Length: 542
Image (cartoon, rainbow, N blue to C red; front, side, top):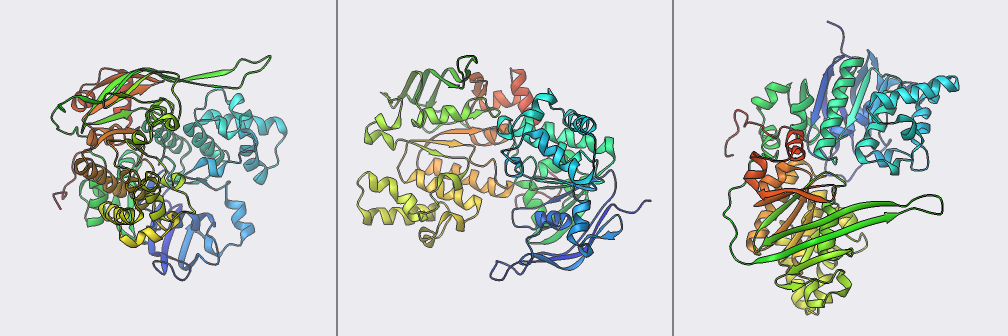
């Protein structure tokens, strides 16, 4: 048997003083052979990305640095190499695909030039051969019209296309080892399925070793040969994918698997009473560009949308990026104006824009955004963020202070969180703060726009449970926007599937999930990683 491509032996990585723990990674042992996929699984802060950065020589030294162990790549200890020697390996022998391509791709450079930089760093090629290699790399990752893609800037591409460009750049020199650090976390399930299939196909064709870092055991079930589970910097369980998935030994592994959205339709009675929200013929078209010699571009984000939402009901709006689901949420909250159509709330017509709605109506519909860090002002304390709405409505400050404390407790945070700032909290905690801010306005309808798509599965499960709790406690109706039918099935009484600005299918959750009528709906279900995951052995009501 040939020697492993990558061996991590007793690796420990220190953290700067004053952190939650002294070591980001402690005594880790891993092994990866050619043609195999090793998935390193764990929550944020488990140390899995630290291992990837250590292999690539990208740790922010001296504050974060290896203090023990070895990293053997093809028998050579990477920790003993200097920067010049590591630079010769990066890209050529070891490639890496990062989690967020927009932070990795230069927004001012065309895609082809960025892939060309990888070639130029390691080889001196004639212009024609260089261009041919770039086109071949883009063609390998399944991008249509590679000549046009090569001339495009990153912001002109979709999330899935940008991730394919990152894979093309990582593979253009055919490395022996490819490291993929959460490359599908925030992608639609259909795009995620395409990227996972692409990486598996390229790996088998090129015979490379793949180190895949993720927090989602659903993804593990799709691609892994072997699995290493990390918790707080230590490997707590290893084994083949089948061993770990079907008979997990460690409680932490069982908890991660249990946190995967199960996709089983919730059982609920048909809501009674008059509808709270009635939407009829809602339309919104975005227009951009155009000039004397060039036609403008039109995107029909909402086409004649009509539906109702009963009091206390949760309606899931499901679709890929670009389907118009987030536009629908912003139209209902008045953040953008509709072109035409009618929105009735509790029997009253809502004005198209928030600023034109009476003050008494503005609080009735509140929104929880996908990225709480972007929606919370970094200069305002958490308490100020939650209190701003009630104060603007004239609620006495003493009453507001009591309200802030009670809401923080309600969403699982301590009262002293009110004096801290958003950057001091984790992603899951920030989403809890965003929920508290929305509840401070005492809404009747909560619009949640992809509120858990970028969270770890365990944190995602906690936030989904919190949504369910506040919905029952505050008697809220909810419009839950997501690309993941597993989450919608778990959370919603009814589901409406959107595609290219239209609702193409809707109905009771069980009917849509178990008996989908449209091919597009069936594709969404099939693309969700491990949608039909059967419960592994040893998983009970723990």
